[in-house]
Amino acid sequence: MGYLTRTKEEAPLDMERFIAEIRSNAKRKVFHLNAIRTLLVFIKGFSVDQKEIDSDRFVRQLDDLSETFAEEKDVRSVESVFERYKKIIPAFIERQKAYLRDREKEIWDIIELQRTAITGLNSENRDYNRKMYEQSEKIDAITLLDDIKSIKKRLKKEVERIQETVRKKQEQDKRQMEALAKQIDILNLELKKARTKGMMDDLTKVFNRGAFDNYLRKMVDQNTIKPSPFSLLMLDIDDFKKINDDYGHPTGDRVLVALAGKCNELIREQDFLARYGGEEFAIILPGASLRNAVKKAQHLRKAIAGTRYTRSKTEKGEAISITISIGVSSLAKNDSASTVIDRADKALYQAKKAGKNRVVSEAILKAEPADPIPEPH
Image (cartoon, rainbow, N blue to C red; front, side, top):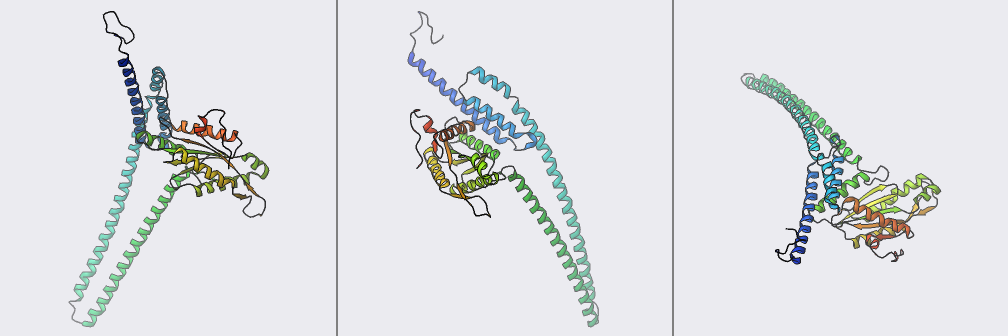
């Protein structure tokens, strides 16, 4: 029996029951969608972050799939996207298995190398122990001599040999330990460089766009599992092209470096600063509400506007001042990384449109069009 049709024999339509059923179905739909998004986050957590298996692309594809479920789309549309993406996960799992098998073989090769080195070391120690034992036997034999002078002379010689053997062994062990420590230091340094090189902006020495995208995605994923609020500031230097045109690109570069340094001074240790691209920067504020994020943005804007920047490290010349415009958004329910960025970008656009040197919150975007954007003060 359908809800909207009934025969003469059927009971009257129970509207309250009908509405309750619709609400129950809507709740189940929201739960299922959130459960799917959470499972996708867990799947991403199991993926190994390696270029060799194209893990970045796999994570982006899962993000796209998660956003599809978060959007209000009809069943056919979601089903079509899911059919296209459902082969991605098993294919990536196979790539990851093959990668891990290769890494396992490499680890066993390293273990074998270490075993060989230890075997060689044991052989050296056995040789050392043999020499020490032989010399101790000689000392025992010396004590059987009757002539005291001969005993002292032979004993002194054997003691000197023992001391020399011990000294050589100590020097050999020291060289081996120093060589091993040096090799470990080199490997650690290379590993650290490899990890940070791809994450940092060469000019400003803050995180780059790739590192920002990864961190923002992790923050959104974390919130899917448990509430982890944060806010986002998108900063842009006002009239940066004019600075480059009037003073040259070296001065423009110095402005970018100075701005990054000033922002680093003013944000918390747990905040995440990145160069988003060109003269645009992004700051993620973990745990910050929209209201507090706007306060932080105003503090940054005033500090930047109140600072004078020299054009050259060596030459005394005209100091220049800059201003920035900032758009602010805060993580909302069912947000994805792209939707958080999109709202902050739109707020930044409004700050530019309203006259620059302003902070605009996403809350203003929801207000009436006639509502004025506050003047900077």
